[in-house]
Length: 465
Image (cartoon, rainbow, N blue to C red):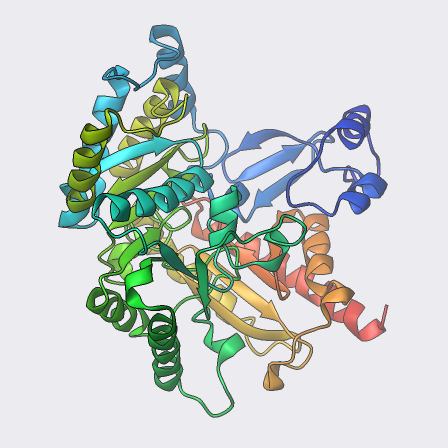
């Protein structure tokens, strides 16, 4: 298959010369050029040479309705003609905001959030950054200026602003950026395959993580710790699914020490796990919840932070005392984004998209499990329409490949050669997160292409290249 890496066009050369790419090996890009995508068609995207790729990551976990949903394009066009922009500052509001907040309250997964408020932004990073700020505002307003620290987890991903990247637990997000910021504490990821000890059961592993959390709180002092932030399923950190009982035990600790829970549902929100939110899957009771990505199927940038009624009332009282609530973005509640979000939510309901996820997800999970036992597959894991295969040099011993060898990156290149786009995460984890509209036949196609890439990778590894 011809790709942009083999034939760098004028568009590719311009990109190499002038575009600073996010999350890219920049010197490699300079040598090879980008894959220039020019069109979308359902679960597929098409490059500038006309080659089709099944998009096994829904872009960046986000294009839930695929890449050519006309109803979203029509909703955007209608709004652009009617009111292309207005703001929500100083007591004003674009009309579509009023409709969207009502819709989101109906979707909110817990009574505390249903009674609360929503604050809009443009990305998951911004909404998590806002949560970081509100934790401080809330505790200052309550006369607890020392209660500011936030506990985050290794391998967590919460965004790329200075605060959100500090909350994230991936080293490349901190190196050379002088991060993390002070006040961020870290505990282990609930990754039994990667962090479990020899002979340790999942139940004992959870015991150990809870003891670690309790020890950290005792060491730092509960009166200094304000919040705990967690993704229901850790996405960019490796599609890490917590063991049974983990969140139940963690929440009991947080409640005992008056520590807020922030649920980062940027990846898991709006149906990825087969329920509207991961909060429902794992029985969470968050005080704040962030959403983005699939709220608009990523057709336009938008995110939201849900805050509980208790937090809102404290913030409202404090802001009245100083004269205003001093936070917001120029594009908070942008009417175009609101219109697309509203139409996305309507499609989820009218087309029973979450029911569809429940029906087809077993096909994905069973297909991935068939790769378990492969000579270079250490573990297969997944839930709903998210999954991963973790490559390993010695699966029985849980021994990973040397990261410098780039085995996962080789797999991704071979998948692309076979017309499949997937993503390698840290530790040679190959992630799958297709659009929610994917059919069983398309899942079979995706897994067949992945199987070919895996066979190519095994041959390459054995060749010693």
